[in-house]
Amino acid sequence: MEFNAFLSGLQDWAKNWPKERTDDMSKMAKVAIHQGWYMNEALLFTLYRDLGDYDNFDAFMEDSILSSWDEFWDAIFNVEPTRAEILKEAKRCFELDCYAASIHVFFSQADGIFHDRFGKSLYKKEGNQAKAEISSYITDFIARDSLEALIEHYKDASILRRMFNEVYTAMFSVTAADPMKNIDPSNLESELLMPNRHGVLHGLHRSYGSKMNALKVFALLLFVIYSIHGEKMLELDA
Image 1 (tube, rainbow, N blue to C red):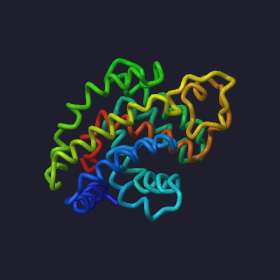
Image 2: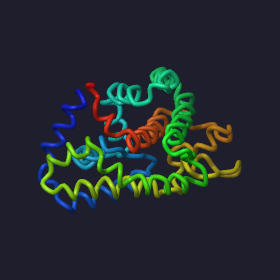
Image 3: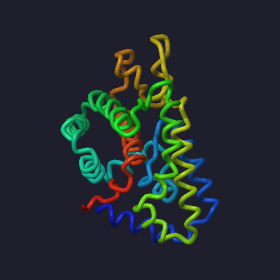
């Protein structure tokens, strides 16, 4: 499915989006992080709309990401051309079932992309610096042109603005999430819901190389890219 058609369907579905669903979506995004998943604006409506069709949240997220896998990557290469060769290797690794290798690149590139925009690490001080930077950026982010185009499809524009503001701010505020933790060798990898960046990149952990974990770290990469390049990410037919 082309992504513009996907968005059009969501717009039709959400024309009468009520305030209480905005509150629900913000809560669901926070819950998703604590299950090891970072959401982005392309997945948020799908989460509320389609989750009831699944008995398992992980299965829902896997299907949601993989059903638009190539479209996501086309958009990523478009907005990050200087990182395209590295990211293409990560994509190939995932598709060849080399999940641990893909996770390494997803983690490092999420940090690099964030650093390009803010001059600070995504993970440093357990994400607190990232939280501070994104908080000052969020007011500009929710006024971008593509969001304005989406807003005009909604009954109450203020609701959509508040949803994106609250959801993205809330997700960046979860600095205790697994990727952000500063761990030591005594911390058990088995207790994590998704890979820990420090444990992976410094070789402290050994059991993270699964398809589900790779998708979770890819979702983190997508989250960072959407928070910075969202208007371009939605221009998938460009």
